[in-house]
Figure: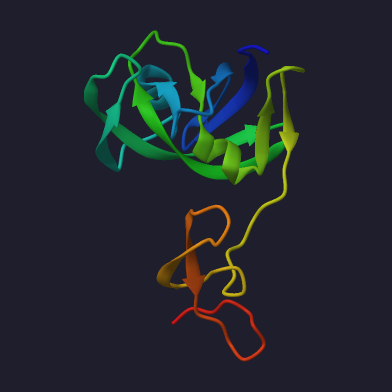
Length: 151
C-alpha cells in the first residue's frame, strides 16, 4: 500500500495548469497552492475552518475551479493552500469524478455513484433489543408492502 501522486489539471478564468497532486482521501477538499490559483485567476468565495493533521484548526479560503482528470472535466471547490506546499487531491474532487484511490496499484479507479432513495431510508421509530445478540437495533416505519418509508 502507499501514497501516490496523480496528474490534475486546474482550469481557471485565465488559463490552466497541470500539477502532480498527492491523492489524499482524508482531505475534504483539494489543496492547491494559492500562487497557482491566483495565476489562473481563481478567486476565493469564502473561508472555512479546517483541522490539520497536527490537530491545529486553521481558516483557509476556498474557491471554485474546474478540474480535469484523465481528460474529463468537473467543477469542484478547492482550498487556497500555502504557497510552496504540495498539492492534494481531496475527497470532494474524487467524488465529483466518481473515482476512488487504489493505493496498491497507485491509480484512480471508477466507482459507482449512489443516490439516496426513500426505499432505502427508514425513520427510526424506536429501538428494540435483538433477541439473540442483545444489541439494540432500530425499528423502522414501513408501508403496506413492507418497504421502509420516510415520515
